[in-house]
Length: 310
Ligand code: B12
Image 1 (cartoon, rainbow, N blue to C red):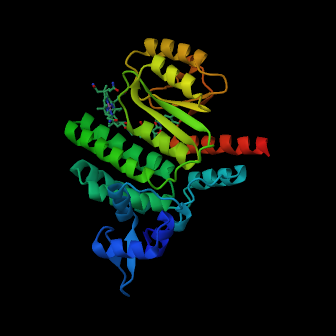
Image 2: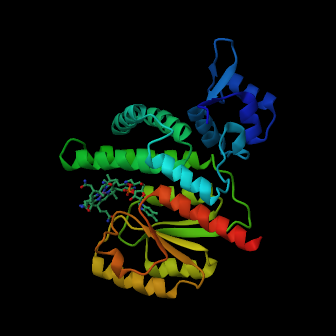
Image 3: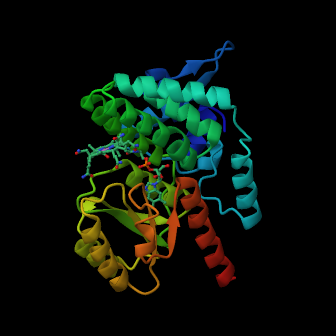
C-alpha cells in the first residue's frame, strides 16, 4: 500500500467525484502535499483527519491499495503467517525507529506525530493486526514499564491510552461497512476490567475480516453479556481479559456464562489475564494470544462457512 494518494484514488475510495476532492484539497479541507511537478498528493494521516472531521468512511478500500475484507484462502493465510514469522516484508531497523518515534510522541502527548507514525505503520504492514501486535502493544507495554520504574507519570500513560483509542477509532473509518448478511461477532471485557484498547482492536480485526460487530465495551457484568448474547445470538462472542479483580469469582461467573450462551455461538477468549494457570479452568471454543491469530481465525471461520454453502 502506498503512503500518499492522488485525488483520483481518494475520489474512488470515497465514491465522490475527483473534482470534489480537488476542491477540498485546494480549500484546505483535506491537507495536501504537492509533488515537485505540482501534483496534489494526500498522505494517509491527512486522509484520516478528513474522514474524522467530516464523519465519512472509505467505501472502496481497493482504490487506495487496501483490500480489507478480502477472504484469504487457507494457503494464502499460511503463507502470510510464515512470511511474518520469517520477518519478511518489512525492515526491522525502520520498524524500530518508527516504534521509537511513536513512543516518544505518545509520551509527549503529540497526537499528530502519533497519527503520522501509526499511518506509516499501517501502510507498511497493511492492516490492524500488525498495528495492534507490533506497534501499540509493545509501545504501551514499555510505557507501563516506564511508569512502574517511575520514569513516566500516570498522566502520560492515561493520555497515551486516550490518544491510542482516538487513533484506533480513526483507522476504523478505513474499513468499509460490513454487509447486512455478514456474520455477527460480539464481545467486551467483564466487570472490574477497565481496559479498552485491546477490546477496540478486536472489533476492527473482525470488521477487517468482513464481520458485523457489536462491542459491548469494558467492565460489563457477565449476566449482562449473557443477556446481549441471548438477544443477538452472535456467531462469535469474544471475551478480552486484561485484569481479574478476583480470579475465583471470575472463573465462577465465566463458567455460568459459558454454559448458558446460545448454542452455535463460539466463545473466543484472549488477553494478558488468561494465564496458563487460569485457562485450563475455562471452557471456550478458541483462545488467541494475538490479533494476528484472531484475524486468521476470523477469516478461516468465514471461508469455511462459505465453503459449506457452496
Ligand atoms: C493502559 C494501562 C492501564 C489503564 C487502561 C486504560 C484504558 N482506557 O484502557 C488503566 C488505568 C485502566 C490501568 C489500570 C490498572 N493497571 Co494497568 N496497564 C496499562 C498498560 C500501560 C497498557 C495496557 C494496554 O492497553 N495495552 C495494549 C494492549 C493492546 O496490549 P495487550 O493488553 O497486551 O493486548 C495484546 C495481547 O494480549 C492480545 N489480546 C489482548 N486481549 C485480547 C483478547 C482477545 C480475544 C485476543 C484474541 C487477543 C487479545 O492482543 C493485544 C495486541 O497484541 C499496561 C502495561 C502492559 N504491559 O500492558 C499496564 C498494566 C497491565 N497495568 C498494571 C496494573 C498493576 C494496573 C492496576 C492494577 C493498577 C492499580 N493498582 O490500580 C489497574 C487495574 C485496572 C482494572 N481494574 O482493570 C500492570 C499489571 C501487572 C501484573 N503483573 O498484572 C501493568 C503490566 C503495568 C506494569 N508494568 O506494572 N492500566
